[in-house]
Image 1 (tube, rainbow, N blue to C red):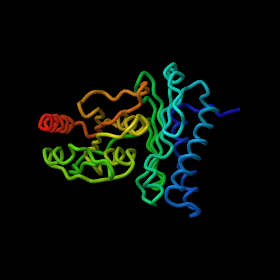
Image 2: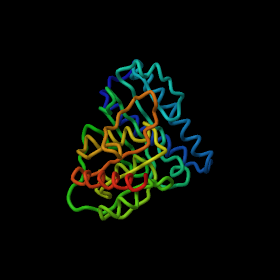
Image 3: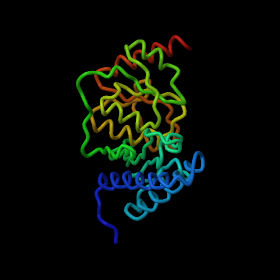
Amino acid sequence: MSLKLDDVTLAQRIAAGAGAILKGIRSGGLLRGHDLGAAGDELAQRWIASVLANHRPDDGMLSEEAPDEVEERLSKDRVWIIDPLDGTREFSTGRLDWAVHISLVENGLPVVAAVAMPDLNRVWHTANVQAVTGPYSNKIVISRTRPPACAEYVAEAVGRELHPMGSAGAKGMSVLLGDADAYIHSGGQYEWDSCAPVGVALAAGLHCSRLDGSPLVYNQEDTYLPDLLICRKEIAGDILKAVTEFEAKNK
């Protein structure tokens, strides 16, 4: 019989457990590069799917590493949106900025979320998280491989430096930790990339939205969700204004 765990505890334990599995796969040194990343994706996905099937058999699931059963998940009130290994490239090359994303969505919003950064031995979750306040870092984190077209314009407009980083989870948590003031992204993301980091960031009191200021809505038929802003609330307006100005200048 399965343990009766509340949703937050389950999300936290799944994130931590998948992280431990991934670190174990990498620690042997028997696989490298693409093969290491592929093994990590596959094994973490299989373990997470087994856990959810055991503990939440009636819930839906959307994962980067599994076929999308669209009609089934859209019929569910509760859907787990997961990325078993966010930042596969970083994981497979020995970097620290990779993560595990676990989130539970109801009515389009992540009501429970956990983000693990296993190499830092940290798991952030919605039940007990608060963003760092105080002095600004004067940094904006962006993708290492797909920087937003508006990044340089926005950074100059709000007086910040750009700092490339890996996983979306790592970038989101850098804002939570106060290591960055904002994370902006445009292009190439899906719901599983941002759902858990957004859930944790919202619980911590940060601003989260699309780059046009509209809400982030999850468990949609089309899972492409290309742009994102996570930032301290007091600078959200300035960043969104700068994005709007950039878009107007580049029509």
